Image 1 (cartoon, rainbow, N blue to C red):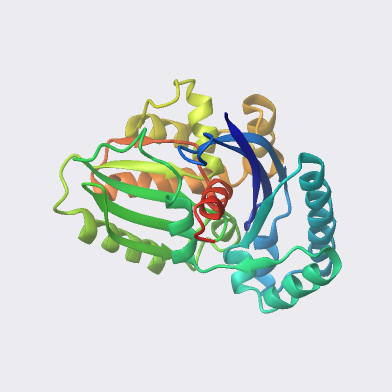
Image 2: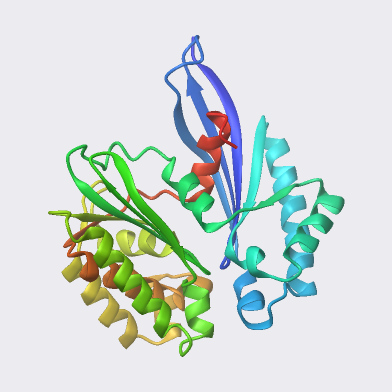
Length: 298
C-alpha cells in the first residue's frame, strides 16, 4: 500500500522567498520514493536590494519576512506538513544584520532559518534527481543563477569534478554594473580551466529566470535550449522596455528586470565552456531542501 508524507522547503533568496510543499510517495516498505509538487508559493521580497546596496536588511523587509513566515507556517499546517526546513542564501549571508534578523524571525514565528554558504547551497540543489537529464558517459556544467550569487558545478561521468560559488547574481548586477568586471574575468578563467578537457559538454541550468526562458521557448520538457536561442532571446529582451516585458511576455514585475542579467550569465557560461545546449530540469533550492530532509541530509 502506498504511503504519503508531506515535506516542505523554504528558500529565502535575494530576489524572492519561496515555499514548496511536496508529497513524498513511497511503497509499503518506505522505499522507492517519488516527489510530487503539491503547492508552490512565491513572495517577491527582494532582500538583495537591501544587502547589496546598504549591507543591511531593512526594517520594512524584515517585517514583510515575519509576515511571510507566519503565512507559510499556517499554509504548512493546513497542508499537514510533517517536516520542513528554511534556508537563506547570499542576501542574508552577506547582510550585517542577517543572523539578527533570522533570530528575530525565529522568536516571532518559531521558524528557524539556516543561513547557508554558496557551496552548501550548490550541494543541496544538486541533490535533486537529475537522472532524467544526465547521461552517465557525458560531461556537464551545472549553473544555478540566483539574485546574489551563481553556483557552478562541473561533473563528468556522474562524478563532481569541481564546484565554485561566485558573488555575481541578477539583483547584484542590477545594482552594481561597474564593480563586477573582475568577477566576470574570474568566472571565465575558472570555467575555461575546469572544462578545457571535457568534450561535448552541455549546460544544466536552474533558477527562476532560465525556467521562464524555457517556458517562453514552448519546448517540451526534457528538450534542451540552444546557445543560438538564448543569444537571440538576450537581444530580444534588451530591445523591449521593462513595461513591455511585463505586458507582452507576461513576466512578473520582479522578473522583468532580472531576466536580462540572468540570460547574460547563462550565455557567457555556454560560450566559455564551449557548450551549445542547455538542459532546464526546473529544479531549485526548495526542491533540494525537500529531498535532503527526506534522505536525512538536512
